[in-house]
Length: 234
Image (cartoon, rainbow, N blue to C red):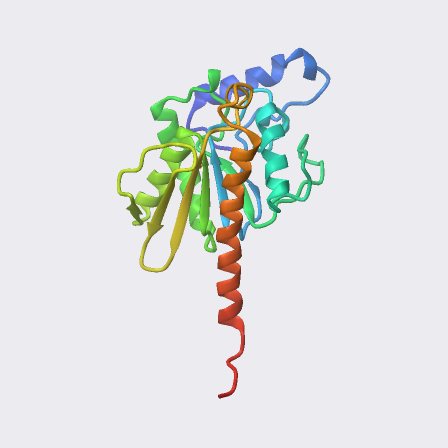
């Protein structure tokens, strides 16, 4: 990506890529805005916070190469959304099924703490990704910032929310409706090491989120199959 809306973040990511972490000293770093990853006709979109300085900023793919990804991809695999349970680099062969992973931010912010202005600068990218997913039926918001960005996208595109003023919490669901479709937002704690190491987010809790998303996808597929089926003679 060639975005330069936040020059300070471009400089920070490039600096991290030059200095590197000792464990990755022999590896090339991506060091640029990280694009979304997944199926362009996905029915499920995952919205995280931002690339990790030595994870996605190194590998160039969301949730790849760090502890958060080590917790996320196995859950996606168990739910049928990922072809493999491990994600280490862009050429590792992982394929997402009916899912796309993105984030509220495309560049790694210092201390994983984007400013409000940086989030506003990056918002058009998230909005464009949402617009491209015409079959979208569920959004899994990973963390409070991902949840807030998701709701902003839906309001921007004229969706009515139920409840109107939802509060973030693990397992919280929000129904978004407009004239043509309904999208379910499912909130989850972010799979950061801070949450997973402390037990705030456990594997069963995370699996429940993706089972719910898979159920929404299955219902959408069933409805599409019924619409395509030829009418039976009376």
